[in-house]
Image (tube, rainbow, N blue to C red; front, side, top):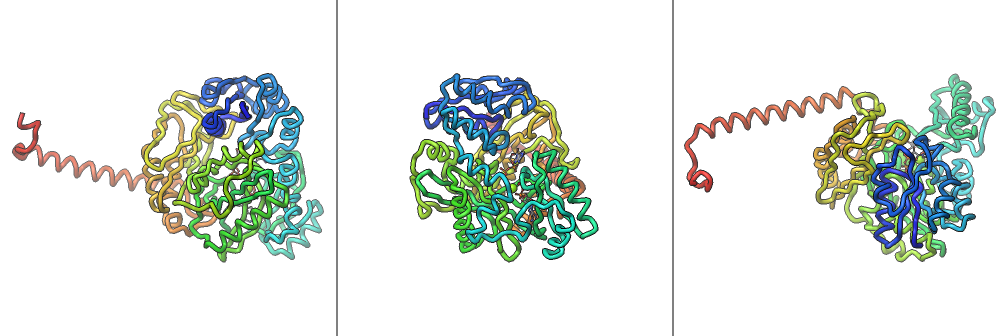
Length: 488
Ligand code: ADP
Ligand code: ADP
Ligand code: MG
């Protein structure tokens, strides 16, 4: 592989190209008109504009992107995450054009792209699953019977859902008919597929997922877990590896089951098997994501393995150069997704110009970003500015470093989730490791955020006053003899 096109934008496009360049591979960026001056465009060896800002007229134009690749003699396409990454038709078309798709086969994408098909594929492997319906359901009476059997509350989920969308909690039978109707129509409009199914709603679960990696020679390993329970709107905001609660036994069992899930769809490349875990450490298969995950850096930090490099090697047909026994967890890593959203205002997008943008640096700090000072944040795409990661030998050290990095991160021009991240990392529930997917709902309010900030500014003011008084006193005292400056 000599030249890779990255069919994506922002931080993930840059992150993929950095590894490609390190491996001596040429890089091609595609971009929309509004992204003309983005870092991913200037970083690439070649860059081609594929259309106007809306993603369905640029980044989602699979055929056009393949044309660009053919014209430039590209031999591999990396899809990143989002956009075309989980589109089996795109993977197929790339392959048909004689270009390597850096990801799993269209078959694996297709099976795991449907939550129902995925459950069907893994059923014979004896993987624990959340109780629920095995097929899509549209008959309300049938749904009532099944829900009564499972017990309320239940969750109606879109089979084709993703990104935390297409889920409805139903508390009792009275709400079922109307919620189902809404879920189906939402699924049709958001995913073009109205199939919904019922799952038992797990009361206080943790979201823990396993990173897997498989080559084309029949070797599959797992790279341990990531804890992603801090979520807002069912979307992850803070992730860490390893989880603060897994025992070595449960970790090994989940890892082995994740490998089976990957094998169930003949998986190749890097993928993620998601589980819900209850307070007794029982775990249930949720879904598999057939792509590089947003939060993959925390796994890289604790294993020392570059997942993009592995994706490229697998796509080139190489064998994995390590076995399960060679892999181990080293230290602890935490990631905060820095979104241009206002935590003081219900996480509403806060779009603007980055008048100041100075990311932190330091020991154990990794910033994956795709912005520079002076850039406008486009309204057309996901408002994630960067991923701020900290590594430490221990969890407390990783927390300390991430807090320090948050305080050094200088962003002006839009509100960000940085203050929210600080709130989470300082919260007793997070520090003690005793939290679940309701962390935000249970503990986070704008009032709590403000109270923390006010307490802090009071402390800062008190400190400043103390310093001032000390200084005043010192100035009144006679000059000290040992100061070189003063002796002169
Ligand atoms: P991850 O699953 O990697 O932790 P997200 O769930 O936030 O992260 O998804 C990654 C990106 O892909 C986000 O930009 C999200 O909006 C997008 N995404 C994921 N699944 C879908 C889907 N089925 N349809 C549309 N966008 C999706
Ligand atoms: P998506 O494709 O949108 O990522 P997932 O099935 O992975 O959908 O679920 C996203 C999140 O929704 C989970 O991390 C969890 O917080 C919540 N969730 C999903 N299924 C359940 C369930 N059965 N019970 C409780 N919470 C759930
Ligand atoms: Mg998921």
